[in-house]
Structure formats: C-alpha cells, structure tokens
Length: 179
Image 1 (tube, rainbow, N blue to C red):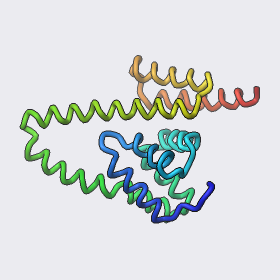
Image 2 (cartoon, one colour; image 1 turned 30 degrees about the vertical axis):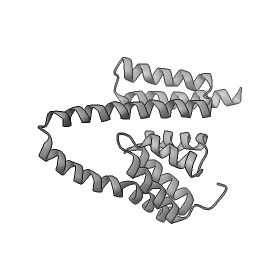
Image 3 (cartoon, one colour; image 1 turned 180 degrees about the vertical axis):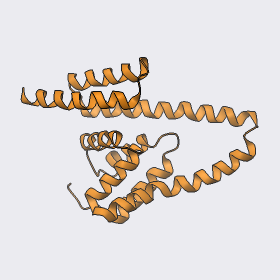
Image 4 (cartoon, rainbow, N blue to C red; image 1 turned 90 degrees about the vertical axis):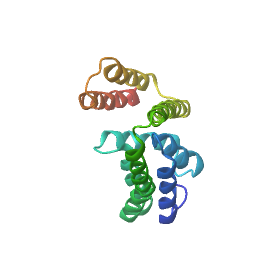
C-alpha cells in the first residue's frame, strides 16, 4: 500500500462501483479500484478477487470487505460494504416496482435480454483486460482451461470443480515457484 485510503474514499469508491455495476459489477469494480483510484495493482486485484470467488457469498462483496479491512480495518470493511450495497438496493427496489407493473409489455422482455447480453460482454472484456495485464503463466492458462471445460463444456457443478481445482492449482503454483 503506497498511500492511506480514507474511510470516505472507500465508501464513495464502492458507492460508485455499486451505482455503475448494472449487469455485473466486476468490470466496474476493477476499473474503479485499479485504473481510476489506483488502490491496488492488477495482480493484487486478481488475488483479492480470486479469494473472494472461493469464499461463500458474492465475490465483489467479499472483495469490498477484504479491501475495506486492509485499508481501514473493520470500519473500512463495513463502510465499503455499505457503499457497495446502498445504490443497488435503492435502484433495485425502484426497478422491481416498475417491472411488476410493466412486465407484460413485450419490449420490456427484449430490453432485459439485451441487458443480459451487454453484461456478458462486460465480463468477457474484463477477463481479457486482466489477462493482458497479469500475463498468466502456462500453468495458470492450463487451470483456467480446465475450469472452463469442466464448467462450460462438461457442465460439472461449480463447487465440485472449485474443490478439486483450487488445491491442485495451489500445489502446482508452489511447485512452479520452486523450479
């Protein structure tokens, strides 16, 4: 950590992430945390996100707690989480109220489908951007490919894939570092 990140900065940063994160918050989280605010490097972001994905609960919320705690302890964790959740909660309640009223209108269904496609594109774009900046090792590519095949092609359960691949990838990384 090169500079002090205040509680206000944490709250406002995660408030912005929560406000911008329609259809998937991870692309915006990376943009705000790494590119815009420079709180952590791409490598640190990937590490925190990876831990957040393995832990129970939404990965970005886990990440908010971990980063908030890193910079401002328990108060930072709470403020980061509150910032992340505040705007989506308000917007969700408003949108749910509108959707309940207009769900039968045909263009509403088409708009929801279009938003889902846009969200998928954001996830793919963020993954490509992170890959370019991190420069994964061949072993990392192998485990990424194994996870993709197991979940995307073979449609194995996510928990089973994580339980098998996480220990194997940790062992492989340890062996790779020794070499």
